[in-house]
Length: 157
Figure 1 (cartoon, one colour):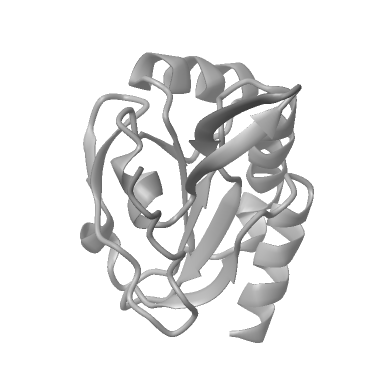
Figure 2 (cartoon, rainbow, N blue to C red):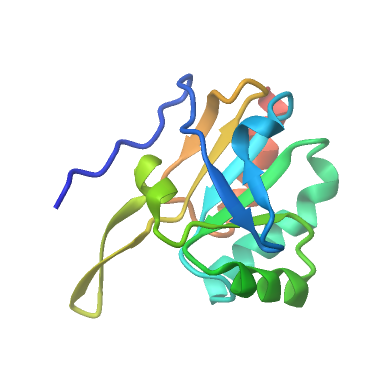
């Protein structure tokens, strides 16, 4: 098994990507230059923790200025669309079916649950500046902490 990439360090350039969103439109990270971006990884749409996290971010969207929220999971675009529609999220959800981007960000990791070992997404978030450098990195973030950490980081920057 290959060694996973390290998570991007604060002050370093975040890995670039192009992924399909919930509407099957290509979204390229570099095309969002000039704006801060929250790139967060979550295991699966419509699960309790992921719903708490996404709805928390939806609820603070009016407080984050022109910061872009990008949620990334290994779900298909159709599943992301259902998730967005059901909870009226209103931000971009990206499909990383082959988990290549999760691997680049070092968040595709070995997990254990009920005695089983498997590979999956480690819930993590990265706040990028206007040039694509990591301002803050939150590996292993809890769903409830994502919105509050984002607001605090934006207030500092």
